[in-house]
Length: 479
Image 1 (cartoon, rainbow, N blue to C red):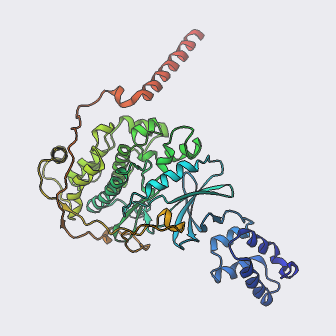
Image 2 (image 1 turned 135 degrees about the vertical axis):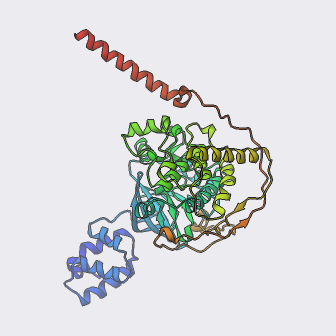
Image 3 (image 1 turned 120 degrees about the vertical axis):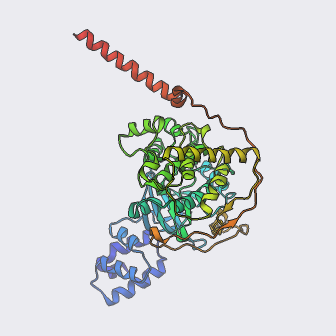
């Protein structure tokens, strides 16, 4: 087909060829048939025809009509639609040419530095972490000057969207979410992996109230040593700032200090948001919020939501301790404490005693349970919620055409509307007692203010004081 036959659609057809979205022979045949019936057709009409034939998606059609021909094909992935924009880049729904499965592909800005060696090392480490609540980091690459990260696509609504649309989460359902999140974090922490940027927008709520932790792996890459980081300082700063409402005190002072203990604090902030529908520190500037995470306690949950069980309040309080050593020793310990609360849904009754007395009593029970777990005492079996069946999330080897080990699978999730009165709880099921390795008890004494602030905090305070004295001295000399 010669170019003179294309008429007004000539430039659009040439852009289609450059995009590599359609095979050249297939494209010429389809366009030729369309123009025979519509010789005076304009590009929008041809684009609409290709969308109706499901040869292009609406997203691809709109971009092509805008003259954008690059970036549709990244490695084995073909971008089909835009899902959203995050602090580091835009996320797209994409299909793999290798296994035809769907993936979420995050495209990073061109300015970002790129160290494929570090990124691929993280991909390999995620192949050892298989848990239904963890969406693994499966591929990285560079194509046409664009950098991308890929995860299997899961369906549902983000926790942030659920709370925005329906308000706070009921305590029983929040406990069920907490158990799944803690189990997923524990499986990752045991492999030396941590999230580092846990927040409601990175938690997906799917069918049957299964939760999925998204963007797992980004925090690990941002925490690499200087000169070895995956992305530039601006992208790192944007990521940390976007998650400031859920960031741990230690990561605020040092953005590269992302640890498993920091995941606990972020999880505590997420739980606070779930139970109250409010941020722990909703007011103030960025600097004021940073200081609040360092030195202040949020409004007690019991004042905002009186019917939350005291045991759950004590768990959230412990997760949000300012000092890492005062949190749970590890997420395995957290899982064992949360499991009895999530195993049996019940309507939370208001405590008969005063809130302060009930809170202190609950803290003693939680601390006692932790002490028994650490020292191997007690030994009674706890009530546990059945673990969701594992999902068949593709591995790096699978979509690259390499043989992969057989793994357990569960059906793909489907999108549905989430409602407060629509959640389903698993049946009560007794769990076998687990062997717990004893560890040293956590000191409960309050640390000094200097230890809370840390070296950087003290330095910043000293510089601020010196600056203030200097300006006061200059003003006195003027008078």
